[in-house]
Every structure is written in structure tokens, then in C-alpha cells.
Length: 67
Image (cartoon, rainbow, N blue to C red):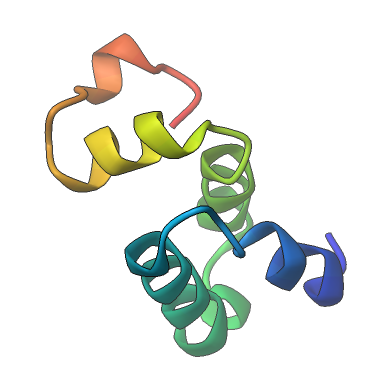
């Protein structure tokens, strides 16, 4: 996926999510293997509340198999 599009998708409704997602994109995405990149793209499709739940361990991966 195009980096500019991913960067835009990293902009969320909260500063915390913006910082977390943008940091990963800037520091690790390009070095990640294709499977991890695909998981990041899938993560970006989640709503902000679900993303916050993922980052605060309130949502288990089993509940969200695409992650």
C-alpha cells in the first residue's frame, strides 16, 4: 500500500492513536515483513474505539482474527 495513504489513515480522532500509529509507520513499517505490514493495514481499518481497546489490551486477538 502507498505510504502517503497509510500516513493519512494513521490520522485518527485522538492524539494518542495518531502518535502510536505514526511512530510505527515511521520507524518499523518499511522493515516489517509482508505479513506484519498486512496486519498493520488491517489494524488501520478498525474504528478508533476498537484500536484503543487493542492498545490497552481490552480486546483479545481471538475476538478480532484479522489482527
